Image (cartoon, rainbow, N blue to C red; front, side, top):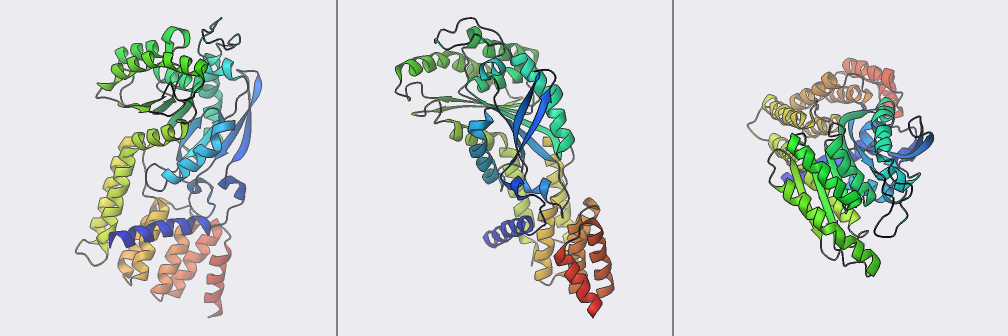
Length: 407
């Protein structure tokens, strides 16, 4: 039974996503945005991906966690596909904000280093604090104003971006709940990142945070110069691992990728990092499926089932730090499952739950209309279809209302 219910639930959620009116299908792959920064004195270009729950015009726009991603021009497409797949059950559907580079060395280095031992040009380094000011004071407010965001944020950076993300965790822990540092340049400025993390750890300001430090095999590139540089990362990375591994008040993962080069490990590091950081979410999602699965043909009442669903979402709210309501699409799927099984009472309770939680959504009224059609109450069905059309002019709903008028 569980397999078929899970399959039904996933199919229902997918169907709900694809059959609604969406004004701009470009959003499905992401779109471009830009923002002029007074702090940096330049326009910054962004890639934005919106999950189905925030771009579906018929259903309620549910606030989503936000993933901020550095090096967007090279990492946005793959990271977006990865997060879309994980969002089925391993992490919450999330808005992705990819920040394109303008001057990478300047923006991603917290301090100025006049000469880099590796021989790379770092003459313009040291703009990281200003860049983090831009993210905190301009970018995050811009995203929050223009998109259906929640205050739960994750920050992902690679190489110099990994340096900046680790530095941000240590110096601005209020900005992000989760950080992923992918093979960070942890030797920068005599191990600045590790020193800052140690100071933050001693102050106790990392409590409750999630941090993933993913590192490459320093001998994997085959390029002696690069391999030699990456080998120097090993000692400061190990020091960070030793510093944070024993902490019980934060979620920390140190992950090494044998035979994974500095670039090869980006995708597996991101995947493993997100799976680790959102393991609690995956567990609660499985509880949700398990709670909902046996409700047909069981002694559990619908009220008891709804109580279980609310309890799970209460624990989810505690993790996120804000109220999380049961997903409209999921409750809708449960309602239709009951409706198609002939259990009208259960179906009505689920649909009523959605009307209470999402009163501005056209979809919840359309579903109640379908319930009353099945219950052979055309007057009530017509009322709910009209309420749905007040919120969204949908062709399918209009046809159902006109069919009732013809009768």
